[in-house]
Image (cartoon, rainbow, N blue to C red):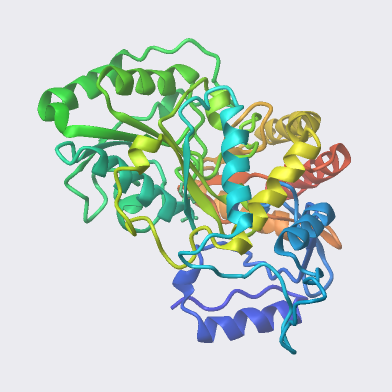
Length: 461
Ligand SMILES: Cc1ncc(COP(=O)(O)O)c(C=O)c1O
């Protein structure tokens, strides 16, 4: 069992880390060399119990797209939950209770759910590429929503149980979501799943989105699977970019080629936007950025800006293939999460968050590319005009890429004086992801990237 992480001059944080190391299994977290203790947050900032301020370069894990605890979001949320409202005077509320929207309403329907479902559909249908958006299948986490999307697609035609997934993708750790994650070398592979290559080698500095792309080798892989399994293949699932796999952002031609193959062979095309949704790629949805029209889009993370809500959204005939109860569980469509979706939609409707982030996106991109002056930085990949990048390290001076990546995360956390940067442990052992809230200002972007460069340079001495 690893020893609890400790940092100098952090008595309260160290006490919290030590306590949880005793009473929680360490598997509850992925390794990060900092293990920050976060006691308060606002906008792009976290504060540690010792009062140090950290720029949040993670947004949770790409969740708090609108920043932490946005005031208007919080008041809209309370309003949707009916907190602070009273029933008509003629109705007696039992003492000790407050009349409000029920926090849980299993199998019943609440107006807040009706609102969230209809508003989300309208919002997505209005987006270019939203032409197949007809129904919402709610879930409480990204992996559950992926499972429900796959269950529905499998149920659409039970004679077509084979699923194609893109190699080294990440769709979650549970059940079928895990089965379509990774590659065929991972253990306990589901025999229904076959993988095809993702053009990782062609994903170089920042995005190659607009570059001409030769789909021929990928078409060959797809044709070979078709030759082997024929009409048994009913589903294809991919992420728009490999997120958890290490921030690989492909040319449009790759994803469009996959969609073309699905259309030609009547295969359900599922786009996993759990991570990319609500602005990360520089448009509200990655299907807009990449010029796609998926049969099912899977949403999560930023959908609730911090509340645990996810959804598979798409063709009604696909979701209609599941019978009563097959998509139900305790938490899906619960009012607390529906209110969060409504508050999030309100914020995106009230102002052009995406246009607002373009200048700060450019500042961050420039700042990250500047890190390439350091011999241990290999590549900076990401979404141009968006808010997600991966900084890949390389082996250098007798230290592995992974050592450099962890050292960078730690150095940024230590920062300078009262300020630091919150990052997670590296993806794929050597990629440090940078994904601040979309609402980071130009000044915050400039200051935090300058700090990051100084922290990185410190390692090179
Ligand atoms: C693209 C993608 N799909 C699915 C998931 C799984 O989501 P969750 O952790 O909410 O189950 C993730 C989580 O990181 C993700 O990035």
